[in-house]
Image (tube, rainbow over all chains, first blue to last red; front, side):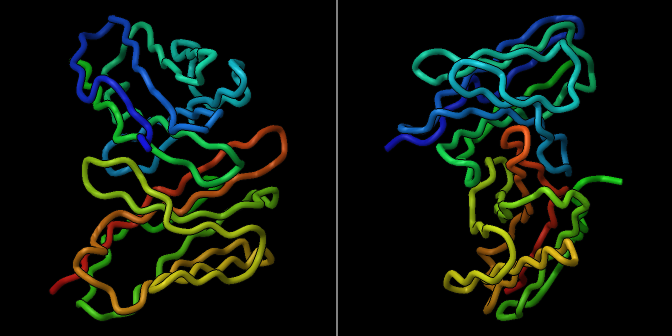
Length: 111
Length: 112
């Protein structure tokens, strides 16, 4: 049974560009959450999708947007990239309120 | 004040020691309490979860939640070098949706 799959694994972008990260949840999971993890920090909540709707959002600007598809997969889009957006972006899926299954993340570097 | 506070360490112990990891929190709406382990360059993996107050044991791991003090702990008995990782506490409230907040993580090194 495949866990959470994220793509790409690594990405280098230039300031001002836009990026799309992708996530396939664990089989049977219907909720997808996205987190940003800076080096040496805990994951910071970006937003959560359930039934193709954004259910919760953290303290991130509107440059961060997302989407969930009918097959529960999800995308995270970041516009107008800043140097400070460089981080590990983690996707987590779940079926209940606790106990996320995380992917290995996408390492984004903005230069 | 952050919703969840966790000492980042690092914490270095000899093999076989008992490890105690702790978090405090400020939001009394948190109902679910989790501990995740994260190895370098990997995503976090769920170790244990507890609903509301109480203790839970799983092998060498014991999780404790004291809601009256807003304090949670993870104990690792007979620590092994393979336990060397970052340990993240996490908490979820069920008000206004299910948002899980993570602590900063404690880096643990177990020396052989």
